[in-house]
Image (cartoon, rainbow, N blue to C red; front, side, top):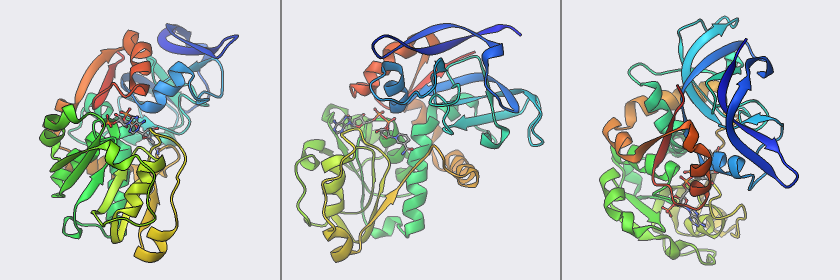
Length: 328
Ligand code: NDP
């Protein structure tokens, strides 16, 4: 048994500390598969864990990082053998189970998804939890019956990770997309991903009326709070909004009017405990419905040593698109 590089979070007198350090392999938690982690990524939740701004971490010491892609090194799980390429996200990694910013991870084989054919482990983490959550949102809208013929869709937090991937996927599927952003300077970027119209997020951040003019048939919301309330009040009869985030807050100051007068549906999206079969569908669809050239355009790469600093930036809304973290 040796040591490996990892971003370790410890409890401090006040709050927590996060630092790149050596971690003892003997301290890895229980699991039937050990993976050599090749790539990870930086999500909003990672920013919360790294800075200690929200109580994401519930065990100390913790290795931060909620998702990885890599190669199986050892397995006693019947489905996996050494050399298999896998993706893992959520399931409490980086929260209650030692996480992904590390050269090694030990997890349950039941948590793993096989890397789709033709997708590299770097691409999988360029997508990461944010991109996979965007796809879960699209799948929920499709299950509701939304099609490009239903009308335009709105994407909030558009220049962020979930938003950027949602736009790229919805555009590939033929939707007209209204992108809401606080960074209108990113209009060219958002249009290059496939947004048809870009609006200032201030239009959607004030108190919501119970019902307002119908503007879209569906939407993907990573912002929450009054923004989600406005989205609901502006959704066309019978439409739906997939709610997956809380970048502006966890509250929802809305009314029942959109639900009982327009039959609008609010679709909840959780990536962490999402059942494995749904994950396989989402990763399969990402392999098919996300333009890799666009994925490359929205991604930039950092090393393990840069993770702690970038964690603060993502919370400040200063990260555009997706960050992929090179581990080994
Ligand atoms: P990012 O930071 O990459 O994107 C969030 C975007 O939201 C920002 O880029 C910004 O977009 C917008 N934003 C930030 N602050 C505010 C604000 N105060 N008011 C309005 N808009 C704001 O994060 P991710 O894309 O990784 O995650 C987005 C959200 O989704 C987070 O809340 C995250 O916790 C949640 N999430 C939930 C998951 C689940 O399982 N349900 C899984 C993954 C993420 P712009 O500059 O364009 O306005």
